[in-house]
Every structure is written in structure tokens, then in C-alpha cells.
Length: 505
Image (cartoon, rainbow, N blue to C red; front, top):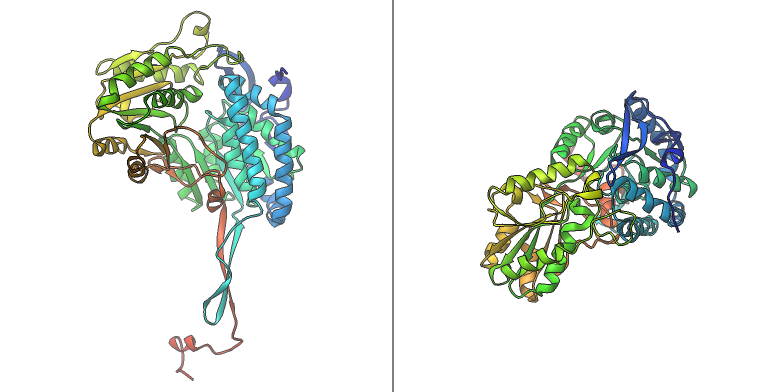
């Protein structure tokens, strides 16, 4: 079934969703949304300004007492209906995601959309399971109880690489825990966040619980992070911008959750299944055209397998089909923009001075030249301290380096500022066990790279940030833990009072 629709007509009222209604932004500036596969503008809208952020935060603040006071069962019921509404909209969501981002439709249909629906279903159940320490007499004279309470208004900022999934990761745990939220998607990718909010409204989520402000970072984003009525900020994006978010959030001492950049190592030991490692490296490095902070970017291969690995990856990359995102046979779509394509090309072109481009390293010609396409690229011969190895490229580029001892391979894997994700490839359980312990990353896959699950946490270490998305662990970000202590003695004058006044009775 073809789910194409006119985005100009669908979002004719504007790209802001505040207190249950679409509206135009008030910044006085407009934003063109460009199809990266063609370079054509498909939608223009008025950007959110500070007044729109204030209105959205006020709507969330007013909605908080009712939503925060709802029972877990009531919130769960709404989220179950939300999951069903998203499933009904699956075709529209996939179309909008591919149009806005250039994702191959098979990726949108089989990864982004079902993953987001599953997130909603998971948090519908998780809403009823806010865990805490068992009530008990941890003091002989008192009973202690742990409460998990919602924080209040959450201000979240999502990136452009996975607009739908990032909306789900930000919104669902926040509202499942009883918070209300203002989400700022990247201004170049607003479509699926707006559809997401409309599905929530159809499911019965009260107006004001979920609000969308589509605006620029320096205006809408900084106002949202610094707003005095926002109790928490959740940000996913680059480490550089994350530092700025942290600086602003510090001014109002709000809760902060950061999921930042990555430079995931892909460590192949000499007893690994070579075919599996080759296929895993190509899939792990090219997912979403490499615009994934957990994508495999640095392959470290033990020397006995190194040459065969380089040859195998180059041959397999050469079979990857670039094309129209809406062609079901297309494997690789464009990058998000021509500017991003040129940024990736700049990294590769500079690397030619100190490394070898084994395959790729260019934009295609012909019809695809209109879009922001770049061929799958494998680079060998770079030094560990080179730019191509140390910096986040965010494109379809994999760098491969050899290593000799296991000690060296693990040390190289840890030798960047980032620590978001990694993988280890070996048939030896002791080798992989050591790798999972010693590689400093929030997620380490063994003999695979990329799969994520709603039940499992996602988040990093070091310059990749802190805090967890997805899973029940995300409630640690979106709830306030409160200790309540009851006196059990009914004694007016407690023994401990003598440390403040008087003597022991």
C-alpha cells in the first residue's frame, strides 16, 4: 500500500504542536525541509521562537498535576492505545521518515517504525512497574518507604538521524513515569515527531502532556534547556553541543541526561568467524548511511585475518545498492543533507594524504548526483592518532587497522574520547568475556553489532554522555526517588534528642 501524502497539506497549520493543536511558529523565520534524495524543498514552515517554547512549557506545566497524579494503570492504558495508534499509522510514519531523512524505505518499515511501536508497547507495561526498595524497618524505631515520583516538565532535544525513534526514546519513558514533556526535534526533520504527537492525541493522551516545538537550537533549544519551569533536560546529539546544553542546564540546576557522540570499535580476534565479521562490519558501518552514533567506525582486526577482512569488506561494500529511498531494493540512501555529504567527503579527502581509500570515497554521478549520496567507503593504513580514526565522521565510512596481541586490540578500542558502543568477534568465550569487561562502552555486542531492544538500556560513558534510554533503567532518569520515614514509637522525647538538648532520661 502506498502511504505517500502531501506534507504541506498535512502540516498546513504549522510545525508546532502545543496544547493539542498544530500552530505556526512565531520566530519570524522560516525553515525549508529538503528531501536529501533529490535536493528539492518539500515543506517550509515558520520556526518556533522563545514565545512558542514558553507556551509549550506552560501547557506542559498545566497538564502535569493531572497526568502526574494519574495511576500507573491509567497511564499504562493510554500508552497501550498509543502503541495501537502508532501501528495504525505505520505506513505514514515510514513514508514521512524516508522522505525527511532519505532512509531506504525498507529500513523505515523494518527498523525505525516497528522499533518505535515496540517502545510504546514496552513502556505501556513498564508504567505499572516503578520499582523501589521494599518497605521495612531499616531503623528499629521507623518504617521506611521509597516513592518514585515524576520530576515535572521535561525539555528534550532530539537529533536528525533517527527522528521517530528519538521521539519515542525521549517521550515514552518520561510520560510513562508521569512527567509532561516539550520535545524539540531537529528543525530539518520535524515530520515524524508531529505525527507521533498526533497519534498520542488520538490515543487519549491529555492535551499539554506532549508538546512539539520545531525550532533552531540557539533560539528554541537554548530557551527550552534554560527555562526555569523545565525540571529536566534530555539531549541526544554531538558531544560539542552536549557541553553547551550542560552549561545552560547548570544555571537552573536541573536534571540532565546526555546521549552524545560515538566512535564504536569493532574488534575482530584471529579465531573469529571471518564471514560473519565481514558481513557484520558492512551492516554495522552502513546502517542509516553511517549516521548512527553506535555504527561500527573503527575495525581492529588481528593480523592473521587482516588482509582477508579488508578484501572481504571491500568486495561486499561494492555490492551495496544506492538509489531512490522508495525503491524496495535500495540498500543505501543519501546522507541527511549536501552539507553533511560534503563534511564526510572532507574527512575522506584529507585521509588520502596519510591512508589508503580501499573502496568508495566519492559521490556517485548521474541521477544520484542531485541527492546527498556518498559511496560506501573503506579506509586502511591510517594511524591510530589520525583524524579519520579519532573523530566522529557520521557517514558510510569504515576505517580498518591491524593489531597483534589481545592486549593491544583492547587498548586500541579504548583509545578515543568516546564510549558509547563496541563489538567483539571471537569463538572463544574467555576472549569475548574479557572484551566485554575491559572495553569501556555503554554497550558491547559479541559477534554482532547494532541490534537494540526496548527491554535493554542504551547509553554511554566518557565523552558519549551519561544516563540511559529505553528499558526500565530509563526511569532512573525520569523519576525522583523520595524516602519517606514513619516513626513507630509514639514517644514524644526520643533518645537521640539528648544529642541536641538535655540529658538521657
